[in-house]
Length: 135
Image (cartoon, rainbow, N blue to C red):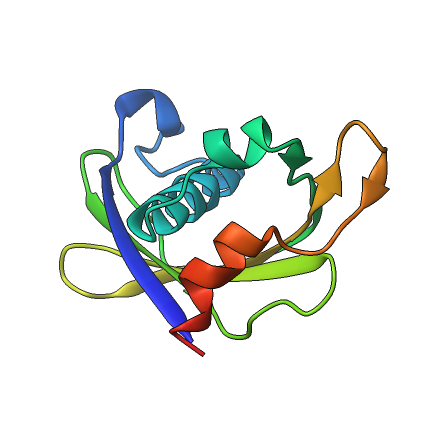
């Protein structure tokens, strides 16, 4: 299993009139957690795209437990529970506030996609090599 943590501070523009994070922003929080999880492996989305691989989202779920508020420092915990065998990779996310309270959980499934061939592919060997040590 591979886990990483990323911290972000809630900006005013991400909240509604009550100072609560608008629910649609969690997709962006998940994306930030995902991108940083890959970066912490020593690999980036940019490098994948340079290799001709894109990762479109195919499914997302989210569960809201407590509100995140303006100026909260959030920790996004991003976990890969299993190493992908096929073309789909699933990231699991937990969002915590500074007090360690779990605010939100979610998952995002993406597919490895060769943009030039216009077809699904397996995880690129360079990325697989970075992840295998965790499984």
